Image: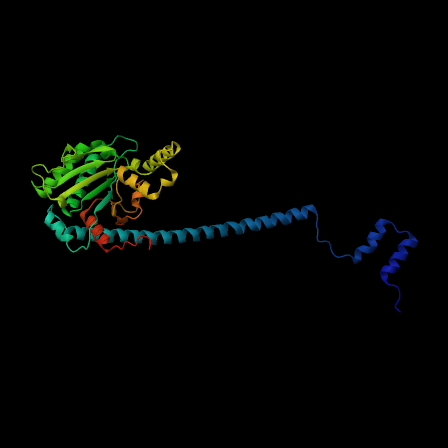
Length: 343
């Protein structure tokens, strides 16, 4: 058996001799590990040194990261800018070539020759036009209104030449509705420039407004007037719509049906999609088959949502003006489109 350990000897000595606390600490100090803690001054110096090292390293890393991010952003922005410029150049060149090859020269025969090979044409064509006004909230400038009417008259003439019976023009503010007699004169003059004296009959309509037929208020008599063609295929019905004919018309119809149901004038079971479709078709307009947006991107601008459910929408990228080549491309696209109706 081995002798007593140093720990037991130390305990016996402490009990027998009665060492003080300081003596015991001095006795145990050689056997204790070195202290990891230091004086407060030493700790403060160490913290300051670590802070100085961190502050020297951190700005360098931040600067390198920021420069890397800027470089990546610049590369992406440059590549995207080159792509946009090339795309605009391509569309501008193609539009210019098409405008030269397929210029109508205000001749109905040339327009009919351009669409002769198409398998079908829309019975109801709709377009979205934008009033290009300079100031926000400023009165509508007469030049902007004239430009808008000129675009509407040009499209109406193209539709009449292509024998499309119905054309609806959507303008968000509804400014054309307040100038229906003036618009009728502009369109009639454009018809005279295209067709001469035997121009097609023009019916100008708007929701909740009495229609104009050849400049007069349209009544029950629909007989052709002297100087106008009696052929039904050369009759154009021009409909003006705005944002108030969109969601607001659906809200008004919903309120009306609700009041009628509360007063027991109609049964809730009789309210169906067919009834809503019939009311909106009679009060606003029927659903167009083709919608042309003369703009660089698809923006409906509050177009009546109910009437655009199954409509073929066409637009040309980077195109900001009304052009015959866009009109012709839309008709070619419509002729090739397949109407699956959800199948």
